[in-house]
Image 1 (cartoon, rainbow, N blue to C red):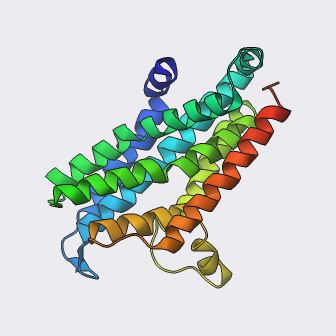
Image 2: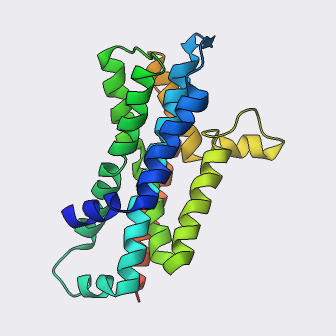
Length: 235
């Protein structure tokens, strides 16, 4: 676990893409004055960029490491160890959750110091807890992509999926989408996590529908990961 965390933190692309970029976006566009639906715009920007960092961190940390291990043949070695499937999956999920912390912390610090976002301690704690739990579906999705795609294709696939979910879910960009795309937005885990975050900073309980979407994505992705793990030892 420590080796995987250090490997990710030494990755310059990870540091730039998942820490510097969301912090930079927040400083450029997120710290606006005024309110929207009774919530500070700067607080809404905090949620959007924290979701960006959390979802991207979970995807890249989980999927990128597995893709590298497949290329090096390390996963084949794991298959002959006493390591259980559930233990391997649990360790990878924990790693994905751990790797969202730097980006979320960076955005939160920028919101506090530059955006003048002042939330009660309980709401800060609830938001961070939500992001940690809500990143699980993205960690699992990253694992599935890492077990399915190879080499540079895996890295590209992770980036494409991340930006597709971020754009469709409203994490980046603004306004409604045309036709069926607006309906599809409500079924994405990125949209659900964003809406739950907005509810938390407003002092409301997250909607059951959004929690359900995240739960379904997590269950489906977990099943797909275990199936792929058993079918393919990383060859």
